[in-house]
Each structure stands twice: as structure tokens, then as C-alpha cells.
Length: 285
Image (cartoon, rainbow, N blue to C red):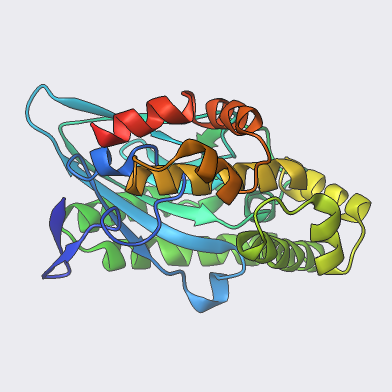
């Protein structure tokens, strides 16, 4: 889908750039447009990026998009108001109909706990009003959605940013700042790691112990570093299949760090909901 953003026609982020986590991104391209916006510099330790989705489907039509979750939370401006989403418990599903827009903020690992000022990483799958954004949030939500619908994703994000900044100022602590920095380094290493990297090897590269790394992830992310390494491999595999459904599955499994195809297929089914062969066929169709 192509759409006018800030007065210029540009490609949706579904057509260029990574789509890690979006199930069958090729099929999604004709259903909605996705724009990504970088966060303000003073929020970059907490916010990974902002995402703006708009859609305009024919009358009576509906489209359901599935997303393999990353181990992070989101804050989203929707028709109902701002909602805070903890990391989903499983495959996330959203059905679109008619015309609409949402303006989301993808938090960094640990950001959900830090932003909400919690003593735990949050209950997986929890969704609730983002009351921590303060009393001006309802009007800001309306304005952000209006800007998004008008094809101005940058303006939509500029509307949301002051609310996030104020919330961060209220919730930030020395401990949360340190945890976010440690997790950002860990996830950066994971993104660049050789497929099949173990938790022990990851801890070694970070100059810490596996036990300390596991405790950090348990306290702030809510899943283990082993879970994150495994999910990253599946994300890579699904991304590669989405771009080239004709890939040899045995070769793909090896390329993303699996020593046998059975383990690869099992992890893929748990994350995506279907075996890799079926996923490839759906992407090809």
C-alpha cells in the first residue's frame, strides 16, 4: 500500500525495511500502511520506535493480522483512548475493518515496567487504560489519531511524545535506568549474534554470568534470555520466508541456528501457529 505522508507519497514500512514479527507481511501490504517514526533523543533508552498504522478497507470487508510478539510492551492510541499493552502471552491478533488509524509506541525491553513504575515486568497479555499518561491524554489521543488519519505520522508522534516524556520523568529511577541500559546492550548483542548462540556465550560477551543475565530478564522482561534467543531465530526465519517462500526449509533451519529441522519446526509452530512449510505456502499465495 502507498499512502501520502506529510504531503509526499512514500512506501509503507511493509514494503521497505524489516518486518520482524508481522506474519505474512506481503499479504498485509494491500490491507494497511505502516509508518515508523524514531523516538525523541531523551526517550530513546525507553522507546524503540513509534509506529503508525492506517487502513481504508472496502465496505463490509475485514482483515485479521497476526503478529509474533517481541518481548516488549506497547502504548497505543486507539479509538477507546490510550491503552498499555504488556508483552502478549501468545500470537497477537488484530482485526481491521472500515477506515481507521492507531498510533503506537514500541517500548524497549524492560520499558513497560520502567514506564508504568511497576515492581515486576507486567502480566503477559495484560491490556488496560494508560492512566499514567495523565489527564490530558484523552484530547492528545484524539489529536494523534486525527494527524495519523490525515497522513501525518510525524505530527501524530509529536502529539504523543510530551505525554510519554512527562510519564517517564515521574517514573524513572536510578535502578530502572541501569536496567534499561543493561538490557539494551544485551538485545543489541542478540541481534548481532551468530545464530545458535547460547545463553552462556551471550553472558560471556556481556561480561556477566548466565545466572545474573537470567535474573535481569526475569525481573524486567518477563521471559528468559533463552526464550529471547529462540524467538529471535524464529523471527528471522519467518522474515526470510516472507521475502522468499521458496527457500529450502532444511537450509533455512541451519541458517538461523538450528541443528535439526524438527526443533526448528516445533519452535516455529509455537510462535507462528503453523509449520514453516504451511507458512511458506501462505506467503507464496
